[in-house]
Image (cartoon, rainbow, N blue to C red; front, side):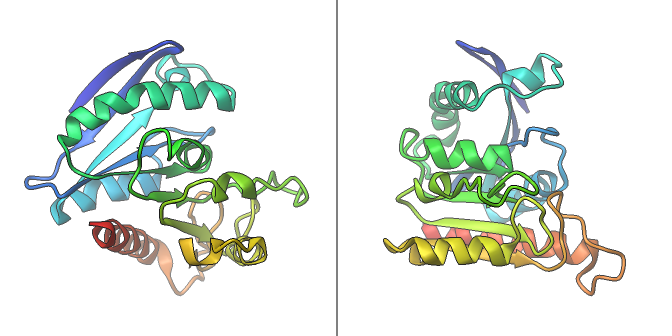
Length: 220
């Protein structure tokens, strides 16, 4: 089911993969370089409804309009927060967990408090631009006061799982207790692994769906 949602910055779109007997709603945003058909978003939408989790994927207005360049972060946040009431209507009182991949994960972190999220799921959080480790975006990941799970590739050029864990651990203020980082061994920013990887593409999909499913259920 698709639902168009007008916002002050353009028309956004929700794609709903509904659970028959939902216990929670997982609301996910896409990255700056792709849409809701990304492998991680697609896997969660196809598998989690059978586990009682309705998955709602959100297309930002710039993407719905057919533009090739993503909107500025502030504009992304506006569209997301203005769409939150419609997601709440769909949830009908159930807990709403937010998240997304890459830029979508950043939006979810920055707006978690504003939309009263029960938790945050980050898929390939872009800790820094490739080759610029000093330009850290860690502060965004630290913003949510609710539990956070991050699935991060071991070979992600935007910040590996090891690099992310090190920065979170050094941040103090209980960050490492609130933020769980799960490494996807060998995976790049798009969650692709080398052919020689012992995990394989199927293993990556299993790891993502199991980790996120357990995280959401643990919040209930």
